[in-house]
Length: 417
Ligand code: IMP
Image (cartoon, rainbow, N blue to C red; front, side):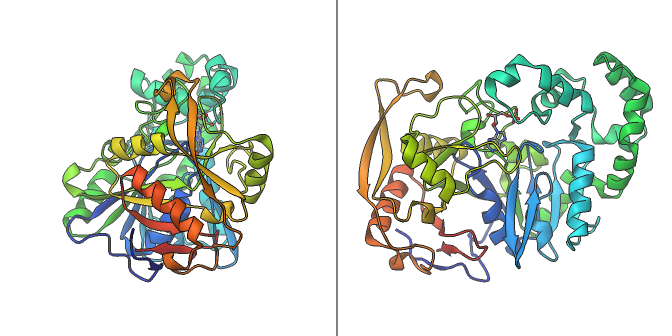
């Protein structure tokens, strides 16, 4: 087990390669946003590589609350460049609104600290409408932000990209609207033009920008949205999102090469949650689940839906560590388990080992709980004995060294190596 101390001014993640990837190891909502916020000041850039406004996280800093959906939370840190990469799908109105809200609350967001890829695909209003009517979306219980239809258009090669708006390509935009059966195709552009003009100054070739930074020896934190079990290839298909949430997505979603990657930081909660349909084998009994949901405030930042809560699922965590090539593990929200009389960890599934097939029977190892609050702990050794046992077991069974441990909602409640 690591030697641990309070999160300090500089985190040494290794010396040679300058891009680190933060990736969710569960079904999203692992607390990646908080970790990004805690680490951002040690990076020159924070770059979001996939997903869209289906993601959402809240950062509490300096007594204020900030909600992020598309903009990387690195904007809260002076001198950090924030990038929305080509792998992201972008809702122009939503993004313009989010930037305006941040600016209104005093956060500096300018073209000096935010860059949006010319090649990101745009979520059009008709994508959102289509998704509302879609039976697939109902079955999966998606966030209904137009994510699936926008990525479908991208792969079908009929999508619109930021560059089409940047170049005022009306013909292309009208043609796309006609193909989607819009009643007033000519109005689609004008309905978005004010918001697009607002974001125009931020638009850039972000792959070129990031490569330039990396070549100069700057370091970049690549931020994934959602989690491994929602990855379109490696998740619980078809109950997944439409993008590559895993570490590989960082390279294609930002246009950088593998030679730049140093660490893959896998983020897991001390328990698991899931929103939407699909396999979720370790769901807690109703009473425990409700208690954890309330303590952990497990309600979606984007849709407000209540999240299902379950015990940590080590077979799926080990799998996630493997498909991402995790080099460092972060466990978040340990404090939510404080006061639980018993804490369980799923160690294997009985009968069927393939989560995608469903009907798995989890086998648990039980741990004694702890009554003390873990929130004041500033080092690993200050944690209650049973909490340490539990973490050590989770670390060993995930197969990656535990380097970051979050014990509370505050920005600085992170114990690190
Ligand atoms: P979509 O991404 O809106 O297409 O939704 C696909 C699935 O991913 C649904 O089960 C959503 O609930 C889930 N999902 C999408 N984004 C998030 C997220 O940020 N956190 C947790 N679940 C998410």
